[in-house]
Image 1 (cartoon, rainbow, N blue to C red):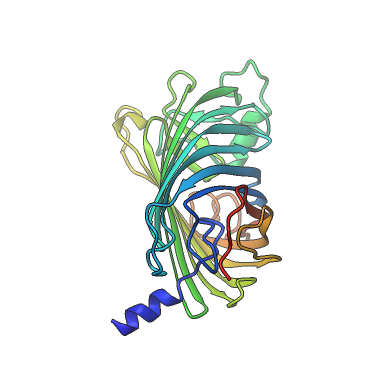
Image 2: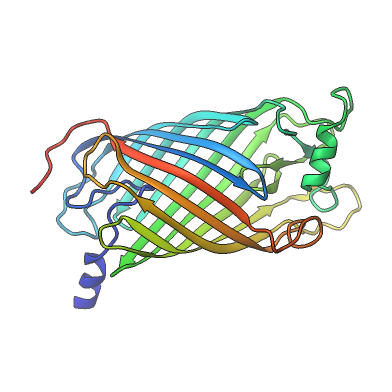
Length: 316
C-alpha cells in the first residue's frame, strides 16, 4: 500500500490533454480552452485545433489519485487548408489518471491541396501521395479528380497518463467513424490527418503512446512516441470477388521532445509549449519503400497553449 501511495503521489498533474492543476484539485466550476497549431511532412499537413470546455467537479478529494475529476462539455474546432470541422465535445474524467471524451462534428473538405479523394476498394485502391497528386492535376470535370464534400465525424477517446519520479507514460486512444457524401461507387476515402484509408460509415482506431522523461518543474520533456492506426473494413468496402485483406495498418515510432515556457495554475494564458516529433515508419503501404524511402520520417513541429477563463482561488 505504501508503494501504491508513493506511485500516485508522483502522478503528473499539468498536462495539456487534461489541463490538470499542479498544486490543487480543480474548482467546482471551470472554463478552460486549448489551442494547438502544428505542421508536418511525410505526409504534408498544417492544422489548427481548438477546444473550449466547461467542467464541473464531481467530488472533492485530497488524494492525488482522485482529486482531478470532472464532467464537461464544450465545442471543438479544427481547421486546415484542406478541411474544416466544428461541433460538440463532451468529457468525463473519474480519476486523475484516466479520462474519456467524445466529439461529434460537421466536416467539410474544400477541394484544396488535392483533397478530398475517395476509392472503391480497401485492398486494391491506390491512395499514395503520387496517385493523389496525379488525381489532383486532372481537370475538374474528370470523374477521378478530387472534389468538394461534407459529412460528419464521431470520435470516441480515452486518455491515460501516469508519472513515476521523472518518467511519464501516457496514451491517447481514439475510435473514429465518419460519414461523408462519397462519389458514386466509392466506399473508402483518404483521411489526411490520420494518413489512413478510412472506411466510410465504418470505424478505424489510432493510438499514441508516449514514454518520456520530464523535469520535475514540468518545463522540459523528451522521449519517444509510438503511433499505430488500424481500419476496420466490412464487406461493403471491397469489390465483388476480390480478396478481403487489409494492407493498410500503420505503425511508426521516434523521438518526441518539447519545452514549456510557463506553468501557472489558473492563468488565462498558460502552458505555452513548443514540441518536435520525428517518427520513422515501421509499417506503411507506401512509406516504407514502395513509394518513398523508409529513411524519411514523419516530422512534425507545433505550438500549444491552454488557459482558464474563470478566475478561482488558488491554494498557497
